[in-house]
Image (cartoon, rainbow, N blue to C red; front, side, top):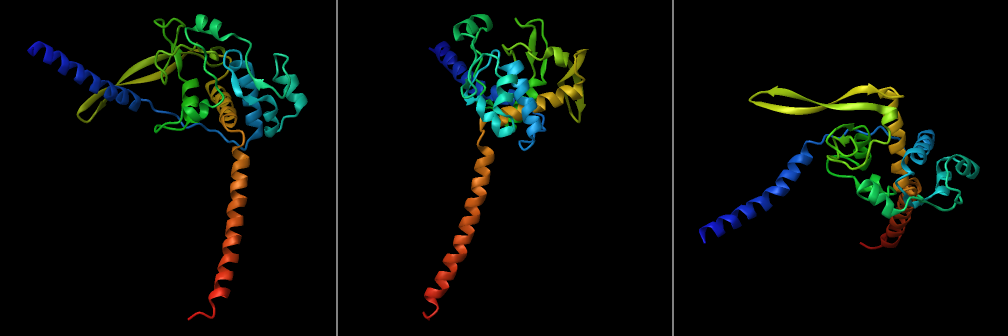
Length: 254
């Protein structure tokens, strides 16, 4: 009976410890600030091109239509000639030709749809844009992983580094940091083999890509803000009129 109670107590302790460990692991993830500007149409257009060239092969954006790219300054002809590679119409959704079952067999899991990933990845540690910006710059070589890649933000990631030719190959270096009364180990990324872009150029490219993914997650955000501003202005004008009416109505009441 005592042994059985000890096992139960151990199980309860383990269940209580798992969330604690998960939170502790999440606390060590430092997200970099994504330098994005949703008003920069040139950046959004470059990001859309990067997304179509590097992401849309495996990941769909099934809640986004190609013609919404007109909102960032592209014409229908530019969209059709430069961003549509599957022969679909400009008004159709940004889907991929790869079958979901085949994708699961090849990668171990179906690549997720990226339509709203910039919103779904928002957390207390930072925005979804910060998460994506840090994630896309956090790949490093790991011989123990099936793909040969791992990620500092998403440990044991199943996705290979699709942009490695541009960024190059990074390795994870551990370093000891001595503090007052403690010793801790920090992980740092080091560029081992340069890619086609310099680190600064690669960061700018990722920023453009993340900027577009933020736009894609909520294409009407700009219109919503504009409408909200006009609504507030209308309410302010209405307040003035109502206040004047109130003074006129109550002026003879003592």
